Length: 193
Image (cartoon, rainbow, N blue to C red; front, side):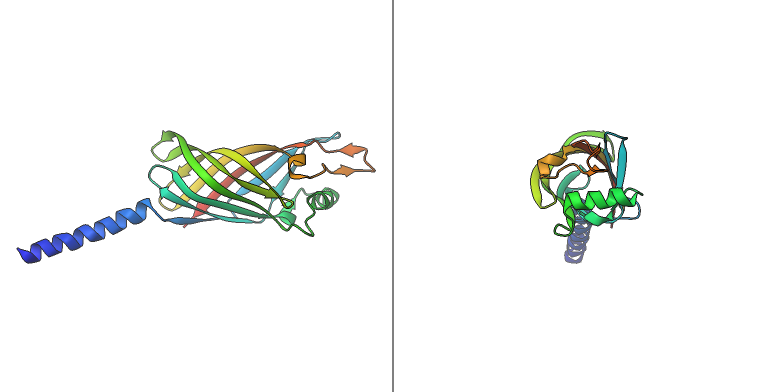
């Protein structure tokens, strides 16, 4: 009888440990090769896009089963932003002052689930600190998050003004081409164990 009780207790302990690990404390790291961050903007000549080629990050959950995020951090190397046009990239780096500020970062401070779309997909709102060119602002991101056992996918977008981060919108050809202040950041972030 004693042995049976001890076996039951050990079995219960092991099952609890595994289920707790499933719900809490799992860290997923951003997969740069499968993730995209694209900045969309306008100018007096044409619309433009610039893509981040190098970014890192991680996400952990309070409860992965309900989509409750505990921590979310993303870091982009500023000079990994590429448009495919060397002159535009040069103007971008100058505007961002990348010689002094090497990284663009986002760090969540609070997160809440807005709704459940399906068993593994949720609409989430995250408030956090976005730092661009050395200036930090509090921003709110709303995005969809899809969860499976080995992969987390975030999809969303955020519109901001460059001047809110003390960035003068870039100009070209002696100021004859001007860039619009408003930009939209679209992201698809894949995190894996």
